[in-house]
Image (cartoon, rainbow, N blue to C red; front, side, top):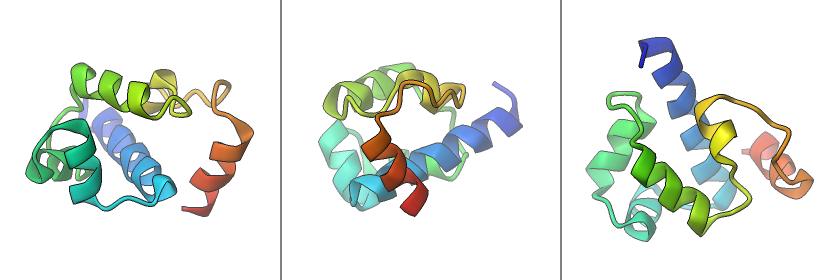
Length: 87
């Protein structure tokens, strides 16, 4: 994965977390990963693993996998899109 794409995914991860109203520790705990691992994802220091992405999308179905990795917005529910824009 190139660095630019990794940074875009990191930005979307931060937006998701903020829209959900969670701290980095809270979202990491919900996903069963360490807070340091989440921080590395959100800082763009580590590529976002597909297994963690799938867990995130299962836990919060309003977050489409396509949006996390590619940026497609067509499957995001309007209510959650408003939360993302406010984050």
